[in-house]
Image (tube, rainbow, N blue to C red):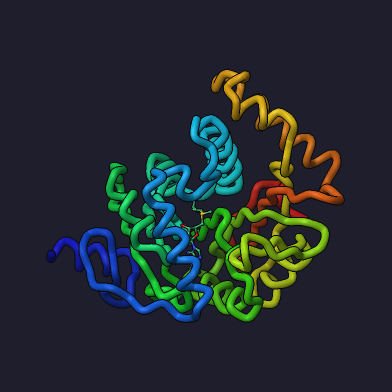
Length: 290
Ligand SMILES: C[S@@+](CC[C@H](N)C(=O)[O-])C[C@H]1O[C@@H](n2cnc3c(N)ncnc32)[C@H](O)[C@@H]1O
């Protein structure tokens, strides 16, 4: 128990929260938040990948490809972030991305609204004391100016309510140290569209950029890494392409995104990088500097 308190203090946590190493329940704020939590709680039984990515991918091949693409994109964006930096994995789900970052030597604090999904994090071995918490969907249980980076993959699209998205964006800014960096990956399209029975919204790149800058971040650029319904994804899903070819296809897909930009009638996965302003900001990789 003492060790746990120490861990909370070291990770800059404000107070005890519902954590996967055994704490009390939390009330979530708002009906939508409860719906999202119930949705992901129910998906937990599908396993660590299907519960948070494509639930229909029974073979696991498509999800394996997508996680590789996700991990590569985020590690690229984290370029020059020194090992042992403290990283918030916002909406960490089953902790798959957290595990990859832990292997790179980063110290992870993961938060999510679904406690059941967080149970999957117990299956991973974290060498740098990974800590996983359920929170109320509004206020991060983390001290101000305490973390170096925040990464978030496919989470902000669940903030259908713009006011709540603004609020959480400011929360992320609050917990980052001056010069800290946020790397977010979200589906984007030309015009905002609500999906999945109001549980998800696909916003435009412009909207995300605007929200980040209104919250106080300095935008460092964005880049498309994947297009919805990329033709080769079907060959991957049905096992016609061996896993060793995945990295080449991922590169081809990113290149395609760069050349053709945001599709007219479909979504794309876009990586956004922004900084909390300070004189001693972390440097970003050149491709992200706008
Ligand atoms: C599509 S999954 C992505 C999970 C994870 N980021 C990954 O890369 O595997 C979306 C996750 O966001 C979480 N989530 C949804 N709304 C959230 C919120 N308001 N705050 C934190 N997490 C949220 C869900 O519980 C779910 O685990």
